[in-house]
Length: 358
Image (cartoon, rainbow, N blue to C red; front, side, top):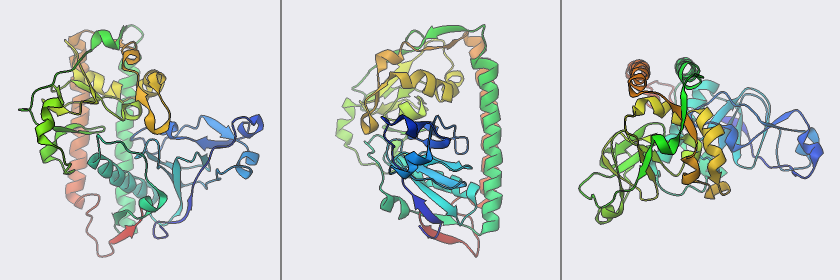
């Protein structure tokens, strides 16, 4: 841990019954404030006083730290440009010894890679010791600056692309609003053992399990009990309450615990960014989440009542084509950069080091 940062901080929750604790100007961050894949733009919703910090387990974390979710919402993290406090669901790395932008991307890539290895299982959390024992590869500082700057500029391009999509399309006042359950129909089909088993990559759809890097063990004789999902249909999985709905890239089999949705005369490319947007997840989906902490689930019947934008298939397709062209451009930029540099975790440099951190 000392190899990446000089200090670490945990968190806590001040007593909610003490009103004076919640009338300060210190941002108090909880897991739900972080959006999956958004590494820099945290918008605090609650603030606490210095008295709350002094009289509870929460800590005042210095600015320019990395807040990592270790319990509910494992895998989310963000760079914090301002001082803050957190709930007990976080571990914060402070006084970084590595370039901040690079550090955030490297840690996120590492966590997401490991989460993908256990997708479909119940993730209770990760301990401080487990987190700090993980290894990532770190190039020399100059290379860190180049990589961090490039990835951050690429993220900015993606943000602008998503914002344009949202402002130009999703918020069009003249669009009809329809209930999700009217546009998409849930189905549950089993007894298709001839189809391949799939693995969900949050933010990346599905991959064939046999071709994934996860090497998950599963009983192939039980595939008849798995649910079939069709290519381009949507999946509600165990972490959809944080990352939105996923889109299937294949005809295949998924966990019977998941829910599958198909829409007639629907272009999935049009709805996929919407189903993963902050607007949809935080303002429309979260109100239909029940349970606490590790036991949270989505009320599927309630989700079907959510109103979503609807337009004719022809317009959906035009917008889908536009989104796909931008995504292709971004992918080409990333691929060209990684090919040039040898990959984020394989940058070759004489000063390359392995840090036992996250």
